[in-house]
Image (cartoon, rainbow, N blue to C red):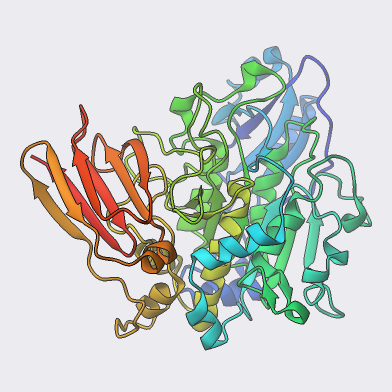
Length: 512
């Protein structure tokens, strides 16, 4: 990353990514990365150095400065600079020989949560849905795994009793503020109501109260790298650039696993800067950076799906949750594992399933993603050489609906014991999932007699029905009382598939 001063856009100017056509050949490749990053890549069997690691051409940056343009940030991954300029300047720059293309930075990040009322009861519900007893029995805590958290702020994190071990002497997280680099007391910062958002996310990853025999997160002994990339009042358009720089910073330090609960969507200060639903297709610059991190750098990135699911004008997930390689996480209810009304929905036009997984959160998808990221860290602790592709596959296959995922909750709630069994390549574990049943149904009616007891149903998400117009696209979700003994289904107009979840048993009905 080329160090640049952060400039503030002035009225009448817009922000753009200026994409350059090429890079100079780097000399001394090993110097481009830290020893930790090189070790991490070697461990994951990916190329030690790639063109994305080469610095951006200083000649191109000088050309921008010679035009009196404000360079606010530089990304070596995107081979681009974030620049503020007037529309007239942008039009002229478009035809410069050192410019490949321009992409306007559309708007602001928003934190993917709906309220600030996070309580201990809700935190415990989230971790309980994953049924983590097998992880506890194995003594897995994410130890030795480097986790990056990209968020709004971490106000009060160093004083929270459930994070005391994380901030113990010689164990402080690495921290970098991309919004205000001169900030000397990051955990005392209070500029908006969202400045403790990252703290709540961190609690879902590392929170622990051994004095109360109460564990909030699964990765209590991981090593953390914290990045503040957004100002809670959203007065800057540069959060996208901050986010990309944070990814590059974490990669340079060998971070393997990243959680972010931020996303682009609607509700920007200037409505003209809003994304349109059809743009949630993985093509945004932020989604491209996430995809590059996954494909080229071997990172595992978990992204909250966003909280627009209840909006008639939107409902979709936000970017970068639309990146194909990201693990996109939605929110479920409890005790019945249906989609929370606010949880972002995967658009029908995507050629891949989104979201990927889900788990409980009453406050927003921000607090679902880090719970599952903690599970991922425990799996990496057990097998540090696990590739991100294999890790993502294990997590998806451990979902309670797998292989019949949908655009409401993905493959569902991952089961920690099942994931551990898959990792160990042994299905002897009693929590291993039996094969889901595929049934062809002739006619327009189906009847199922429930044989599971109430306790079994309650522990495994209750009775849920997903009515679908295709293999993955949900028309509506329904739930039944735990005392239901017979389920009568009548096919809806346009319904082609139905997923019937009866506790631990899952059936996929295909209407003939």
